[in-house]
Image 1: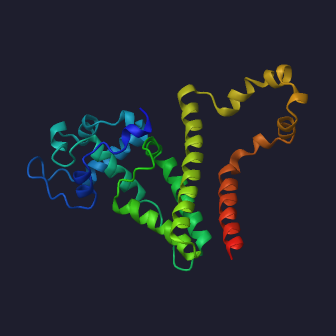
Image 2: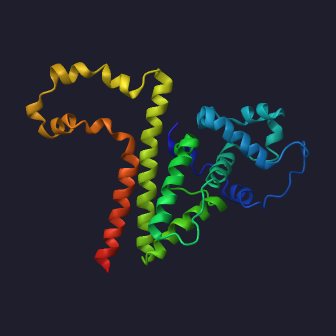
Image 3: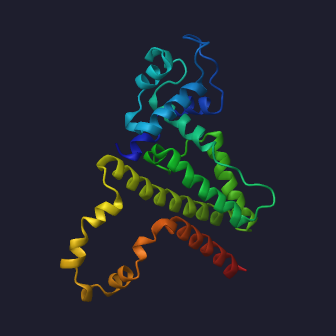
Length: 248
């Protein structure tokens, strides 16, 4: 299922009422046994293990030991449930502390989301450009904007640079998670995959036709990808810093 299929499917008024605690208590069903928070926490556990394709209201009900119809007194459908899951997971992101500069705050935002996506890979199955408008999501975004406000940027540049950092983190996290999931599915690590193709470089690769790739290969640069996220993050923040210096 494509990421876009998981975005914006629920009733917006029902989702927002649940996200902001305005939905009221259920009027029927096993009131003493369940809460919306418990339903959402259980759904996250399932999605962490099986992804959003493996999540269903039936599975959540089975895990909780109730009938599927009982869940609908708490959450209208899977679409609204995914909205709640996204916002609850985003609540794990640490907030900046007093005294942090703009760069330190933005680094925190980036690293926290990098770790968040690795704890909950299913979050990347939801398109990132349609926010759920929940309290945790808005708080995290507001904190990122605040970092750039501290740097003295105007409103348009604040939005542009937050989008730049957020897009970088999502893209790198997706690549990292894709690699890990491919290894789990196939039982073949990236190192094993490349080792099985060493014959290509030995027998078929024309070094003279690819001088720049040959230079990189000879330097062993592809074997040092562990710091790729940190390298790219630092260069992204360097770019913002240069932008500030040029403006001043």
